[in-house]
Amino acid sequence: MADWQSLDPEAAREAEKYENPIPSRELILQHLAERGSPASREQLVEEFGLTTEDQFEALRRRLGAMERDAQLIYTRRGTYAPVDKLDLILGRISGHRDGFGFLVPDDGSDDLFMSPAQMRLVFDGDRALARVSGLDRRGRREGVIVEVISRAHESIVGRYFEESGIGFVVPDNPKIQQEVLVTPGRNNGAKIGQFVEVKITHWPTPRFQPQGDVIEVVGNYMAPGMEIDVALRTYDIPHVWPEAVLKEAAKLKPEVEEKDKEHRVDLRHLPFVTIDGEDARDFDDAVYCEAKPGKLRLFSGGWKLYVAIADVS
Image (cartoon, rainbow, N blue to C red; front, side, top):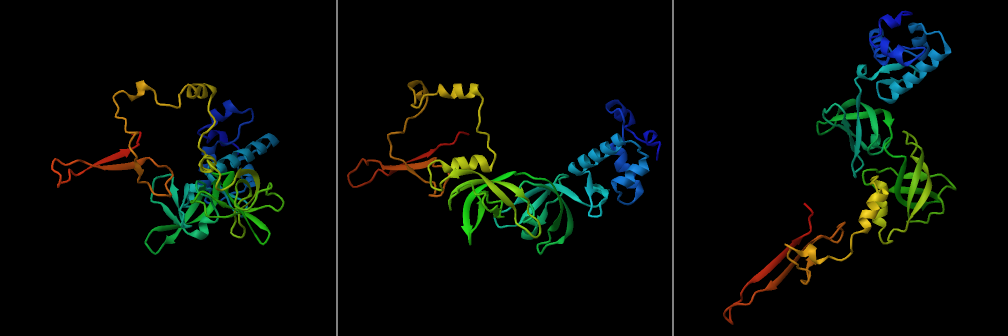
């Protein structure tokens, strides 16, 4: 196929962008589909008739980009195959606190159930390719991980523990059930029970747990405000603000001004009691009840119930 330019629907685009153009992604996918079997990079070089070192390197980079974008998969035999010809499903991993999870397909089809064994290979939020392996006991499609396309977390926040001299981190995110082993000598001085951030250095495999280095000791478990610091890191919540925003926030006064009370009923003098559970993240719902005087001495006037819901909506 030395005259691949005449067959490439994007040949003009490639010639405009590159001094030594190579086959476009579209032509590579078309060629592999018509070929009927996966091909190695060397085979593609020969079949497309590429001759220069620049073209060899450009093809290597293009195949790598197509693999990264889940257009191709690199097989164990060192060959490339189109993902859409292998009945593979691309999607995002959604973990569950009980250890199992799902692959949520990009194409909007039904989720694939992932067993706890499969979930030990990935973290919540990862993008992966999977194939349907059958149906589970509830009749749901069940899948197995073929390849992890991209990782959602470079680091994990959790509590540091040790057992038999081996350090490990238990993630705070309940959707991540794998403990991360800490590389010996890389606990950054963390003490047992403290919250830490561990950078992943070795991703999980069928035989090994994830491993990493502690890059920051966040603080003690019961320290005031610790749950906020942990949540910011665990869920990647933006917490660094532009200077203009900080200046605007600094203008706000800590006390309620008289003008803010207009058209509002002030109930701050009443001893409200929260109705939120003791494990609630915030306490913004409360009640207060008081007896109403009756017109007759022997009869109660009933009760008046105040319900305060601090809901911004």
